[in-house]
Image 1: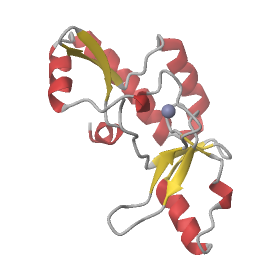
Image 2: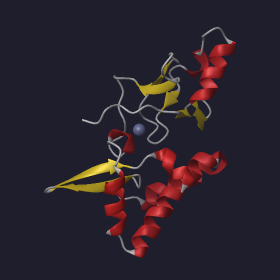
Image 3: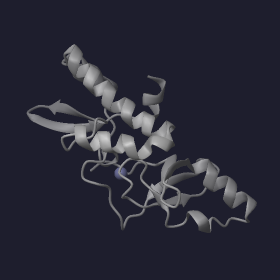
Image 4: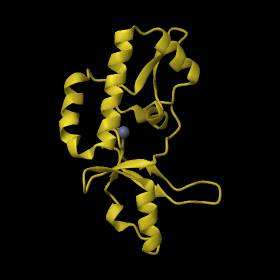
Length: 161
Ligand SMILES: [Zn+2]
């Protein structure tokens, strides 16, 4: 099983916006370690189903968010999967036709657009659910011997694309 991923962004259910872990940390610093307004309202930025909690900064690690063990991601959420290796991504892209690459990029643009442009959130979401056939554009198949495994793309690296 994939090792648990940490989150820097989250879906804030009280406002319907995507926020950064920094917002929570800043708030808690100003309020003597308290972050009640965020508690129980932080969810996975992709599926918005899995509930997250704050892991505070330690000497070796920055503050980040983790999934509560009691809650789980949507079946199609790419956070369930291990990150794809560079070779896997390269091999996968090599095997695609130009129009397949275009489709993939379009879907990914929808995800990025959803994060960057909160106002049209609802509209974009509608488009995504219409166009997707049950799998996230963040997932790519990896062929291992005879087994095809789905691996997820790192969201961070997408922004630089
Ligand atoms: Zn999720």
